[in-house]
Each structure stands twice: as structure tokens, then as C-alpha cells.
Length: 506
Image 1: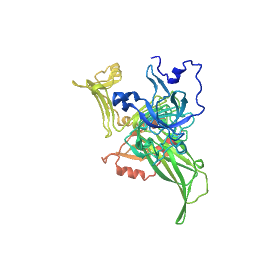
Image 2: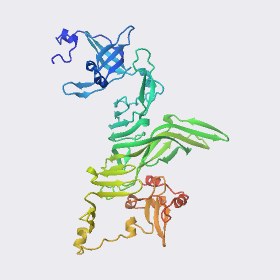
Image 3: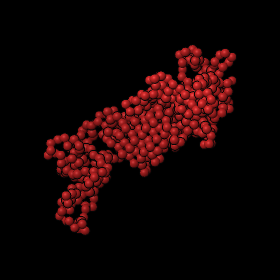
Image 4: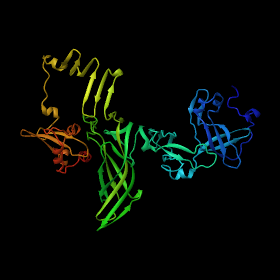
């Protein structure tokens, strides 16, 4: 094996101090054929072609294809480690020539490189591919099937998986010696995206850190849906609006000012430097003192983002601003923040042990089911436990009851106000449906339970505990609870949304 890696010129001139001279220029060539893993399934005589390619030099007429090994960025033949890849037909390669040896590929250039530089995101109806625009220092590894790994400018690692069956047929524009006239190309990120994992902090387009809970997100793995939307806002220098929970703007498509005079209107499109879009994370406010019980709490609420669009004052009258943007909504997955809080979201959340011996099911119809194969326990022997076994239902009041000399005391019934978590019976207990709707308080007026929207001043006067223990509420079909009809009447009060209430408390 002493001749591994040797080429003819190495054998002719074994003295490493007498290497001779390489050519003074680099020759460019186009790859005609690539012998990838599929060649291993062919005849035994063809297997030695694996890892090689046929190239055709582009610097003269009458050249013939040359078969050469493919040079990788790093490969150790002793252990099989390295960064390995397979180029594709019609790739343009830069070759350094050897005397009495095969050309060495030292780099790749895109076909029609000037087009992919000028329009690096999307080029439809052309054989030229699209790439993600990179900032200096970033590294992107992307396969032809669309999966990619990005080491971004913020120091995070983004791993994106796509559905390669969502593709388009492309007809190559290359004439002559083209072994791949037609091919399928996976559509760009958002269209074919299946899942994405981000390790490290992530930032919104304006540079604001993305939060989950009350701390910056440091890990995310899940799936999102993408959409394009246009909204109209009353013309002003500063305009604020909220997106739905777990939604964020990924790119601003256009900002237009529509001015109306009589039956005519004029549209002015603002350039990127003529406006700014500032983001602010909205979540349950809590104490900033980490020694307090409700220090930046983690609650069941989802994060929402308040956006403020700032444009120059041009003195328009009777005008509106039309903002068009691309956004995404986190559908489900796992997220962790820098405070150590773990968030698990999904349509149905199922937790299972081996062989489903113990399970926890949180379903989208509102059911929560905890089951153990041997026994199902809630609580602990210290403070009280309820245990369901095949022998029946058992409970213990814990050592607290035992120390009072009444170990057989019955389960104590909670008062209704204690169960509701209300600090003030007259004010009532707090409930929310979503950030886009008002915050409601449930209180008792005489013998009747009623709902009212919480005002700005009422919310500002609430304790940290009350704001951190808001209950989740869903619309009921039972007329005794909150129905669609009752909600419609409450919305006539034109109360501040829950998202704006949280954003207003600093």
C-alpha cells in the first residue's frame, strides 16, 4: 500500500525536493457525469469508478472528457472520517493541472455565477439554483435535496429538514455535452420546510432576541407554518399592532402609504431605509427580583410579539399604511430558554414510557389523562397523595395531618375562591382566552356569576401573583359559563386586549 495516493509524476520524480512546476493558470471545466453510490449497484467492473467524475475543459474546442477522482475538503482514508460530498452534473470546477498527473479540483463555481450572486434567493424558470444570502463569516452546508445546516452570524446553529418531494421540474439551459437536461429541484425553504432545530439564541429581523417564556430562547426544535399577510393601519409616524401568539414576522415585503383625495388615491412605496419595524416580546410580567416567588414566571400562556412600524412624517391626510409581510407560526415542538424553562407544545401532547407502561395524554379536546400500568399517583406521601391501583382508590393526607393527631381525617374540600385563585373576592378571578381578546374577571354579584373585561387601570393595580396566575378559559356550549353570545357582548365594551395589557406593564 506504499503507492496509495501516488500519481504518475510522483513515481517518475520520487524526490519531493524536485517537484517541478505546475501550470501558471487554473483551467475551468464542467462536470459531465458523477459516479456516485448508485454505481456500486452496477457490475463489479464498474465499481472502481465510484467517487470519480467526467469533466470537460471549457478553455478550448475539441477537448475530450477526462475522468478524475473527486477532491473533498477533508477525508482520511485510514479511518473513513471527513467531510464528504458528491458534486452534480453541470457543476463548474476550477482545476489545477499536474504534469503527468490528473487535474486536481480546487474549487467550484456556479454556472452563470453572476446571476446567482445578483439574485441569490429565488430564480424561477431557470436552470440556475438559489442559495440563502449569507453575511460575512457565516457557513452554509446544503444538499441538493434541500436539507441544510447554517452557522449564522449570531453564533447559533440552524438545522433545517425539508420535504424533497415538494419540487419543481427544471429544464437545463446548457447546450451540448449535457447528461442532465431535466431534473427535479426541491422548492425553497419555507415552501418545502418540514422541521427546524435552532441551537443557540435567535434574533428577530430588527435584532431583538426571540423569547420563549420570560427569557431568551436558546434551543428550539419543531415545525412552523408560513403565510403572507397584508394589514392596513391608520397613517401615523408610529403604528403598533400585535400578531397572534407564537407568530413572528420573518420578512417585510413592502410598506405602502395610500393617500386618498375624493375618488382618487395615490400609493407611495417606502424604501427599506425609510421605515423601521421594532419588535417587543409580550409575556406574563413578573418580579425582576430573583429572590421572589414570582420571579419572571413560566406560565401556560404563549408568547406574542408587539410590532411598532415607524415611518417619516410626510404630512399625509386621509391616508392609510399598507404593510405586507411574511410570517410564521410555531405549531409544535420543544423549546428551552436561558432561564432553564422547558416548553413543550403540540396539537396532542403524548408522553409515554417504555411499552406504554405509563402515559400522559394532553389532547386538543381538553382532556388530560395520566395512567400508570401498576398504579397512578398524584402528589406525594409528604404533603398528601392520591393513588389509583387495581386494588382501588387510596389517599393519604401526608405527614402534616399526621402531626396534628388526625391521620384519618377526610380529604378537605377547598373553598371555591381558593380554587379560583382569587386574591380579592369582590374583584374576582382572572381568565384569558387569547392575547388578541380582553382579559376577563369572573366575579359574583349577589347570587349571579358574571364576567367583565379588565381595564388598564385594574390590570396595573394587580399584584405580581395575580398577573402570574391567570387562568385559561375556553368558550363553552353551556349557557351557565362563557358562551360565544356572552363573549360578543363583552367585546362591545372595546376593552384593551390581554396582549396590550401585558405589554403596558413594565
